[in-house]
Structures are given as C-alpha cells and as structure tokens.
Length: 209
Image 1 (spheres, one colour):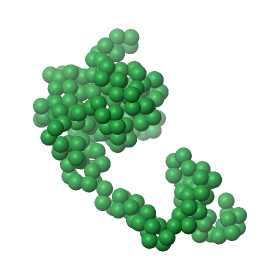
Image 2 (cartoon, helix red, strand yellow):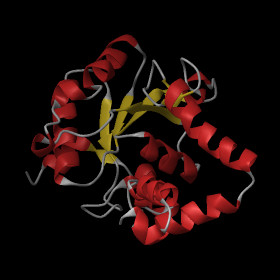
Image 3 (cartoon, one colour):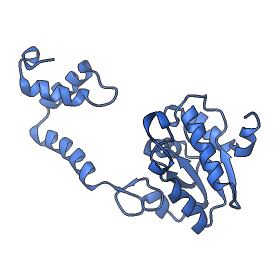
Image 4 (spheres, one colour):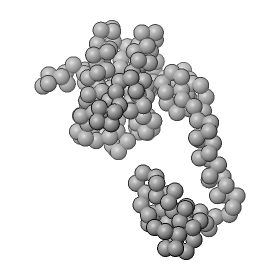
C-alpha cells in the first residue's frame, strides 16, 4: 500500500517492515505499528535496541552451534548434562522445543538447516563435518537424529548415518510420534518428549527402504 492509503509515509514504512516478517500480514503489521505508536519513546527505543543488539552481538556456540551470548552456550557448559549423548537438530527452534519437554539431558548439535537440493543446500552448507569431528574427538556414545520428518529431513538423516555408521556409537532417530511432514517446533511437548524417549535405532527405519 502507498503512503497515501495510510495518510503517513512513516506509518507506511513501519507497516512495510513488520509485514516483511514471516507470517505477518498487512493487518497484523498495522496493529503492531499502531501499538508501538502508543508506547513511550523510551520503551520503543528499548524494543528496537534489543534487535539491534541481537544482530550485532549474537554469537554461535563453538561446540554445538547453538545461538549463545558466550563462546560456549549454557547447555554445553552445564556439567550436569550427559556429554555422551548428542541430539542433532536443524536449528535453534528445535533446541527450544526439545528443552521445553524437560525430558532430555544430553547435548545438541545444530546443523543450521537440512539437505535440500531444491533450495541449493548441500552437506557442505551445514555443520556436518563439525559433527563428525565431535564424534572423533569427544566421548560420544549416541547420536539422536531429530530433524523434521520430511523428505529433506530423511535425506539428511541418511547422509548423517552414512558419515557416522563406522564409528563405535549408537545412531538413533526420534520415534514417529511426529507425523510425516511435521517440524519439531510445532509438535506439542508431550508428543515430542515421547518421541525422544521412544527413539529407535536408525538402522531399523531403513528396513522398508
């Protein structure tokens, strides 16, 4: 929409920025812009500064590639976590979803996506080599593959399996309590928790392939 339709170019620009966010339409963008307009100037500055600081200062854990404020994230630095189990996920949203179940006490490895030739994403674009290095250097006993239950997720799991199968460790996958085509972040906590608890050896999932 043009500035004339909003009666203000400033408002139009604010709406345009909000509507550029995933899942935010023009009406929602308008409500958000008008809500910020009602706030005190200091509150709006703090709101904006939070995102500026996030973009400028965010770091990635040098061990698991999770988003972190320090060189090593709080999960990896926690001595109470089981360091012999590593759950492999696509991104930070999956870490949050699994942590919310309260039923997993191991570590993570964030791939940064999944293999998707259609989107031009190959193994070299993900942190797969870094995962293999962790297995080589650390005392890892089990890898849990917890990517989305999509064709791309299955492709990624199979590639990981081929890269890791010669190591002395268990390779498992979350149980299919998560329906095919679902992403972990949208699964309810009980279903996701049970899928982790009832994980199965990855080799058993290849029987029908």
